[in-house]
Structure formats: structure tokens, C-alpha cells
Length: 359
Figure 1 (spheres, rainbow, N blue to C red):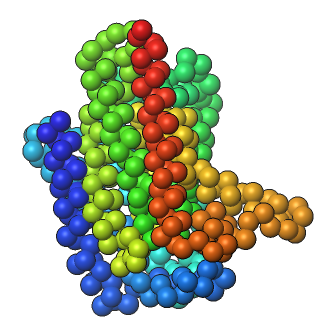
Figure 2: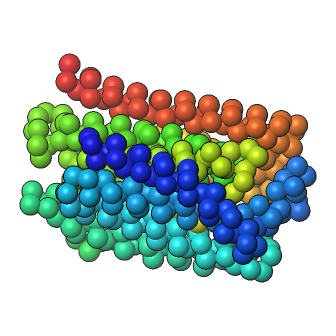
């Protein structure tokens, strides 16, 4: 637990103190946010606000993870390294997207196909390695089973060429869904950062719990087949601390935006935690706010293409409430409340499954 605490504290302090330094660097370079003209008019004042702040979140998380291991002199695990690879890989894709927007002063960075290809390459490498890296107990970071609170004993991803391919597709659906969900939510000051902090906190609790009830060290009827739960707890703690520190500067009125660099990285980290903690379907509940934002865009696009009419005044959903007159800070806080309720529901389901199974 000392390593978990060290990871959280180091990443928090790094993000809190490092963000203003990065802001000054971005201002000198002139790397400011480009604002869409068709968005809420109140957002036009944000034009030029430094962006790509997600680099601070990634850096703080990595430093927190490394120093946590230095503190305990324990080597990093395969699960931890794979989740960090997914986080930094998707963060790099987001960085390319942000840089193109800034350098060309337009709202379009990478084209949709280019962004999806970049996400897919990182996701495929992660998924393949996650099924191959066994420890001494023959447990891999990812599971060939579907999972909710734990593995569901129905194996659609049998160890065969077809099974591996199906798992890779499934993993990439989770990765794309989570990363794009955070990306779409990142439209108001502090909204995605605050919501991500809550989900990281949930995975910190889940990883610590599965470490204490792990089949490799504490076998029992309801033990959890998670390969490296304590190391995943360090990553969740580092991600939570980094988001907390960054939120100090990102909350309204934001001094810096995370950009796609941050939103894709955070989504990748959360997707990696979902896959490696065997809570893939539970993540839909824990990250319920991100799901709502994605669904609002899908509904808006699908309905418009079918009827030429709009369901919402603007999508994603948070912009709809701005367009009907809510203040930005009101939307943000109320959406944080919704995110917190989803996290509480997910954690309640997780704990209730264990209580019912052991009673």
C-alpha cells in the first residue's frame, strides 16, 4: 500500500506544480485552442487557451508509477506496463491531432480514419501482448473470457487464431469506446478531468480489493483471477492523483485544456484497467457519463441522417444544456454528480456480487 500512496502523492504534486510551468511554455509557443464557430457563443472567449495539457497528466502518471516502484524496489508488472503503453500510445495519437489543429489553426486535426487507425494499432499491440504474457502461475494480463465483475465462464475467445482475433476486436471496441467517450466529454472546463478522477478512484478501490482477495495469494471460492492487481492499483492511484492536480488549473475558468492528448490517454488508461481487472462490462456502468455522451452523439447523427431533424440543440449532450440556457459551471457540476452516481452504482454492484457470493 505504500507504493499506491506514493504513486498518488507524486503524480498529484507533479501535476499541480508542473501544469503552470507547462502553461507558460505553451503560451510562449503560441499553442492555443481553436474554438468552433458553431458552438456555444460563451466558448469564443476560450480561443487561444493553452491546450495539450494531457501531456502533464501522462507525465505525472508515469513519474508517479516509476517512483512508487523505486520506493518499494519492486519491479513493474506486465499488466502495469501494458496499461501505461496503452495510455501513452493513445496520448501520442491525441498529441498528433492537437498539434495539427494548433499548427493549422483549424478545428480538424487528424482525419477520422487516421485517428481510428492510430488507436487501432496501439490497441492491437496491447490486446495481443495482454493475452501472451504469462506469469509463473500461467495467468495473463487479459483474459480470454468476457468479464463483468469477474470472468464470465463462457469463453467466446478460445485460444486459437480465431479466438485471439475475436478478443483483439473486442478489446479494441472497449478501447475506442472509452477513449472517444472521454474525448467527447472533454468539452467543458474540468468536466472530463473530474469525471475521470472518479473512475480512476473506483479502479483504485477495485484493484486493492482484488489484490486482497486474489486467487494467486489468497485462493478461495470467490477469489479474483487478476494477474497484477496491486500494480494496477498504483496506476489507478497515479492517474487519479494526476487528474486531481491538473483539475486545479483545468476547472472553470480553465487556464489550460487537456486536448486530445489527455482525453485519448485517459480513455486508454481506463480501458486498460477495465480489461486487466476483468471488469470490462462493469466499466460501462463506472464510466456511465462517458457512455451517455457517446450515445447523445450517435442519436443526434443517426436521427439527423434519417429525418433531417435534430434531437438535441447540439451534441454532445453537455452542449445541449448550454444551448438551452444552463451556465457552463452548472452543467459541469451536475454532470459530475451524474458521474459520481454511476461510479457509486458500479462499486455497489462490484461489492454486492462478492457479499452475495460469500454469504
